[in-house]
Length: 542
Ligand SMILES: [Zn+2]
Image (cartoon, rainbow, N blue to C red; front, side, top):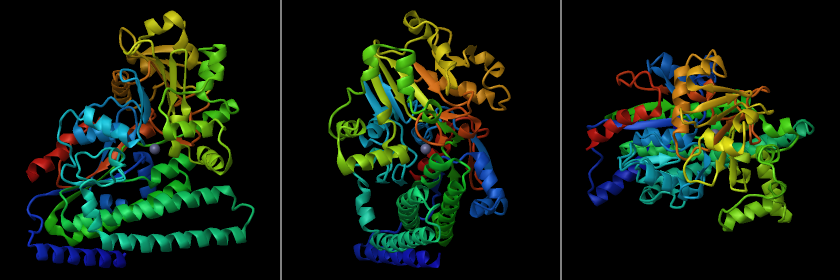
């Protein structure tokens, strides 16, 4: 869009003027710079489909006409953003079994939207390594990757931009433009929705208003802000930029990974990447290499609640398998006070009024906004956390993970029985002889998976490696329960029709689009392999 170019050009001129007044040097021109664009939640299969059907025209051109190779990438387990980003940013195999889990040794839950949790995980697991975004900027990530400037990145959510606050302040022209454009776009969307209502008041029901809210918040405002701010970074020659577009992932959770609304979100992300590309072309002297990748895909799921007539997985587990009378009555929570307790109270329907209605609305329609916290239950030393198509069961009697031998002393045949119950796919558990997988009541070792749940998987080796990695994480549950590949199809334990964290092929298989002249590791079997490649831009910078 030429107006964007004008605004960025204006900002660029302003920056030059400021630099001249302060006699500072322009950024050095020589070395290669790194621009990573992550399209959250997009599987390779959906992208290929979208490209073929004209729903991602810029990426299709980049791959087919400009010769940017699309290298397949398998992302390992769990298929979850924090696990991917820690591996790619620091080159370590993380102890991050999901988006929400329990750390028995610290006796604490880790829940990623909480900025302090993300920061703690990054500090303790980065192993003192230099992150791939050191000296650069992140947008919408879970971790900083060493970046000084972080906008809406979980680990820095309370200090939105750290040192980058100054940088943001210097982006005043860009920010003013985001406000103008965002307001116009919001108005257009609201007017459109109103016209639809007038034209067809019956079918323009709740669904459209939900979509409108998401579109405005994430798809209009966040995407605009990220794109223009990153465009400005490119003009000024920031050494490394990691930008994560969330639009597609959010829409796919709400409507399914192949729903027209999810593809529409992808279409808009594609247009934003095109805009970044045009900025790149205006400053060839900065020598940016553009990478487009995805951290995981999504499986089409049905909510567990729909199968069970409203009974949650935690409830099912306590009622059917860990049954005690008090167990049925108690709700979660050693977890602290403050907002959490208020939310719990509100969720337990103890708080009346408008706020209650708002939270109920969020809980029903935007479960991912509240994440997994509401799906925690603990009783009799057993803690259950459900966080998507995955649920973790922790026996709190020891700080180490329990093996099946220990678990079955108290709960005979437990993994087998759970795996045979409705809405359950596979159940993973550790044993003295390595991880075991239970599926539809039967037991498989990693060597015999091909005879069971993962028959016909071309990437069986990746699945085996993923399960081994996952069950060697100290924070993974003593039981790891997946709704993926249940007899009823793929099932999520939260109210969503697109989900990830599990081992289905759409969740695990993504892509890396990269410049034709660079050589990337192949095959990419785990995001940990990206680290040395991206880190080499840092050494060049030194
Ligand atoms: Zn997601």
